[in-house]
Length: 287
Image (cartoon, rainbow, N blue to C red):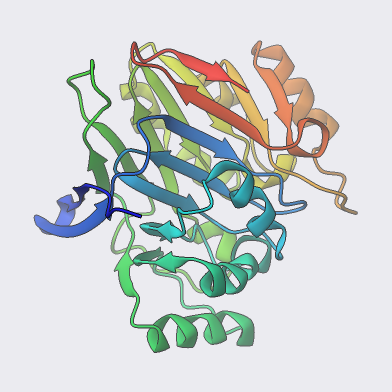
């Protein structure tokens, strides 16, 4: 097989005015955002001409099956893996991925979690000489848009601030990410609660009137997705990544609040993997 053409994926670390350059393979001209059905856990794939970005990896090896349905058999590279926070339902699947895919870089938040499983993961990343990048507010990843569109696409960390330290719940330290893709805004919220949602109000107020997709926080927990937050972001589509659980997730009150703002709801336990395609005009197509 001939060697594919190469592009540069630029990691613009704005806060430090520093740039990481990572060479990635050109594999597809189709831009895709997928919310993967990994059960009671999170995993989202952003795939385009510049490469593959995976946010979280779910709780087990189901991630491999879901990735295999989207990525072609010859594409076994994750250019950047982003761990929103160190909970098992977000990182356990990464152990499986490490044996099947080449991971070029991993972005972590600034929460030091003493659990043995997370420490084992850190040791595994170190053993494999995988580049570790610290994520915090202002860090962004940008790449050239598809042909026909001039504006670059960008994935931006909007929470937490660089100097904010955490000593209790990993959920409070979640990396929150905003993806500006053509005329669309995707918000990846991890497992944040209403307390963290309040801190995003100024950013949400700055967003233009575009088509918006929300990854509903914490599998639809009633401690997240407050009225204030939902009204500020005002998504047209809401994605709930959830599986069989004993936590009453998604909570009926969350579903009610989403319905009240007119958001169309998709659930991975009902709809399976939810995949979005961006055409050359920037329009969003849901599969």
